[in-house]
Length: 178
Image (tube, rainbow, N blue to C red):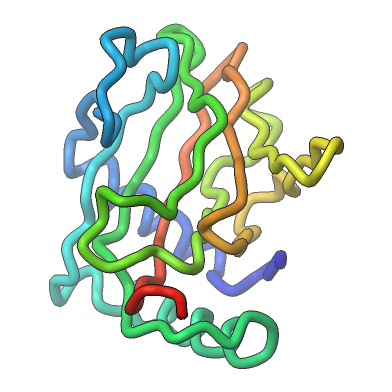
């Protein structure tokens, strides 16, 4: 699902400023492989649900309620801490095929969301792609596009080859699927 214009340009700017102020650090992966850079090269910062971030959480929680009631109908209980994600071309930024639903989470992630923060003219590569059977589909790159999908869908971010790509990642979690 794609939701355009959930956030205004001023809100997107504020999200980016807030994320940059947190000093993103090199991301780790849940199950280390010994060659983590082959899987993921990303900078991340965690945006806690503070008074400064509450409007972002509220807007995303509303989007989850709407999308879930209309399309997914999963048993979800709330959002995890928001992840501000930065992919730099000069670092080879990418994230290989993975799912967000897994055994490393205390509550299963059910709906994953990526909010595109960077104007696509400011970077090359960095496509959010999904594996759908024998087909690979790419998500829209428009700034402000919120892409929502079931957390058990295989997806990746292709290597950023020029510039920097920034996004906000959120997960709606809940009890085990039954």
